[in-house]
Image (spheres, rainbow, N blue to C red):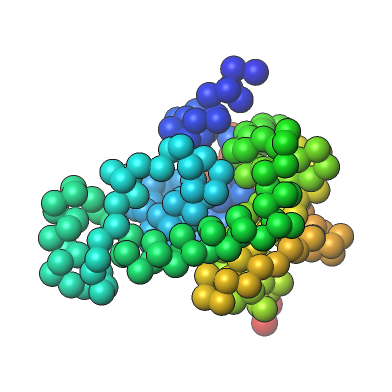
Length: 244
């Protein structure tokens, strides 16, 4: 399909074409901040570092100093950093220390035999988009790595011992369920701790996936009520309702 070819390019995936589809990031917003659904969000430090990590791991030929410039400042509050933003015409940059830590994480992941063989096995495909209608709505997703058996999703974490908990907090459960539907394969998380550089492989259980499906359904209820073609309410009337 022509749409799939275009969606492989991030400018289309995150641009006007991609906005025709719901995605896991939309689930996160619909569940946590529905009033700002599909509002443009500024690049955050985590987003910038995550983009650098994935590009270096999967598409190193796309790494260029202009996009991923870093600066030898101790913090983002320093005069040096603020002058650097003006000099490089940036809203955000990596600190050298942050880049060095991520480079070490990348090297650690790539030098581990089990990780390396799984990620770079011959025949694997990187950054693969998919689209599919689910619950009457068109969805999109982009898999980090498609292997012959599974989807590998690369993650970094600040505490790998708590990953089973943070995975639900950051809606990796809905991602795992959604990607299973989009690609017809199970998703497995290959994770590295950004602090200790410990590695972990986390396979979703049926319970984890069921939590994910439930989140997708709850997000769709909000979407259909406030944003769908047959929306019944104005988003300004949205109220959080929970049982404690």
